[in-house]
Amino acid sequence: MTSTAARPGAGGFRAAISARTLRTDRWWIAPLITFLGLSAWVAYATVRVFMHKWFYVGEFHYLTPFYSPCITDRCGEAAEFGTPLPSFWLIPEASFTLPFLLLFRLTCYYYRKAYYRAFWLSPPACAVPDGHQTYSGETRFPLVFQNAHRYAFYAAFLISVINTWDAVRAQATGLGLGNVILWVNVIMLWAYTLSCHSCRHIAGGRLKHFSRHPVRYRFWTFVSKLNTRHMQLAWITLGTLALTDFYIMAVSAHWISDLRIIG
Image (cartoon, rainbow, N blue to C red):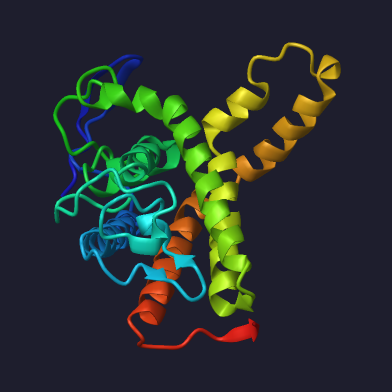
């Protein structure tokens, strides 16, 4: 039975409630789904990154974003930027980009909320107590590195350019289902990257007079509209990345044939 005995409070006396939370809805479903979804994606991505095969379809120039740009000795004709790294199994083919993409996602404002709640229970939901006794915010190691998000955005922007080039290069062979999947993935990646809070601040965060900067104001308005969909785009891009990689893997492994539309 919940105790309601009065106890001193900031404004006099308040009810002493022993219940952990007064929420009666299934508040734990959202963090549980987030936990399962992110765990499944990380498991799939980790396995694929260290498979070191089935990442390129030479006939159509399909290169999975998990291996772009390909810079190890295993890359073969998929290497457009040289092969400076050896073919050691612990070295991913996309060693140049993966650390920056990981940093960009880990420090993303939405993903912080997602894994703070789902993995650290800090807090698991609104009006639910934190799972930890103390809280120091993002002022100490390792969370102080969350401030690197604004710098990770620049790297993510350049990587989106590389992904766009991969789609353009594949387009030179004609048009197939793989091309459509590559372009959908690239468009979604650009939408997610540009919807970043850091991008919105760069676009117009320091402007005092929008009327004096009409071009930047229009871009800021566009980015602001994307920003309202940042959470959805964060999840959509996880899906398009996995779909693009799986399709290219299936074609490269000869499990299926690419559906050609032109060429």
